[in-house]
Image (cartoon, rainbow, N blue to C red; front, side, top):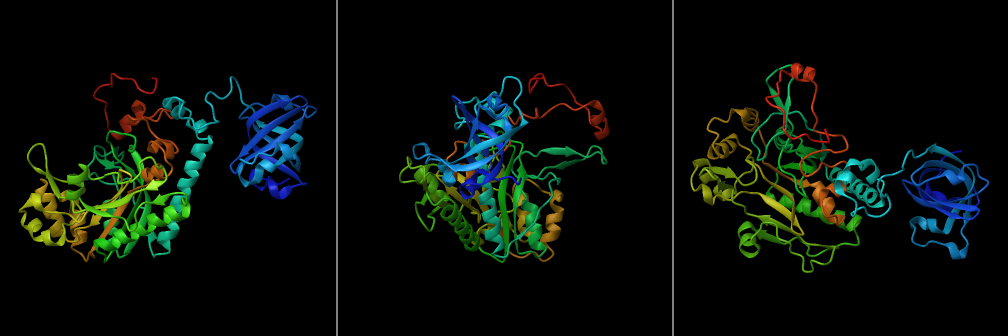
Length: 469
């Protein structure tokens, strides 16, 4: 018989159905055993009489198949809290089969409840079990809804979704690269992308005009509640636009996400207010202030734009570095100073950040679309002969249109919308604060033969053994 999902039970009253899923909870009532059977769509109560073979052996999280008749629950037994009106019905089981029984001592962590009380390292070690809990199921399904909404929204506005490479070249973009050794070219390395920044600009040169992707990015930096070694961003770029065009499109999609997918939430102010960097620092001492009128309201969303950032800031050694990324263009009135390499500390960039409830959730800029502009930036930050960017110089000199874009921290946005304390709660398989995957025991040692193939040698073994080894 074809499988029936829990959510479809109200449409099957009086009919025989086959259900497959996990035994969420079990209750014994004399000659009857009540099992809450859970599948991807919800939970339904199934009732087994004692004469059903092996009914007494079912334990929580056993994987089972039941066949039975859908009946309306007695009036006094209705559970109105269950969605899809599932609390109004039950399945009176005529036969059941174990598809997989729990072995040994059973499930080592509780699946019911939100799980916040469970040691986080234990949750990450047993993440495939932790993910069964309703809260994380909700988070990841809502995250999928957001990404699908974004794809549909941008496709309707003539954007093309394009994947860019994961194995790329190490270039200075503001964070430490993850390096991947080449087996064929020993001693040479790829880098995992910190962002698709250069590729998306090259796609503008290629004439696609409107690009986006849900991009995986990698940065070898210290982690915290809102940061991971690998993360996901919505990345988009547009040709023949000014700052206002990019900001308007992003404001539109953010408002649409909230109104369509999170109608219980309220956006404090529309259109989003704007603050210059100088105003934000003077008034709030941060460039990502929490502007909520009521910070105790979990459904209040205070978006804002921060604009007019300084392009450069002094390093500890007295030189200059960029405040956001080296590919931004200055505001138009500062282009002459940039090209002349003068008044460097006064140059403002076309950068714009979108903030939400005290978090930066996205940042972008209008780009330097001439080779001269990019070379000037790189010279100012100390790259006197920046040949590592030759591909960019060549491309920008061969018909590059004016263009700009933005990247959102998708993990961070979902975290805020789901009222979670950190991004690990909205990522399926996150890393620990020091970058470890406890479940897979990564990073890990590799055998000497693998190192020999790559032409590598470990200088000395780490004194600290990780992952329980």
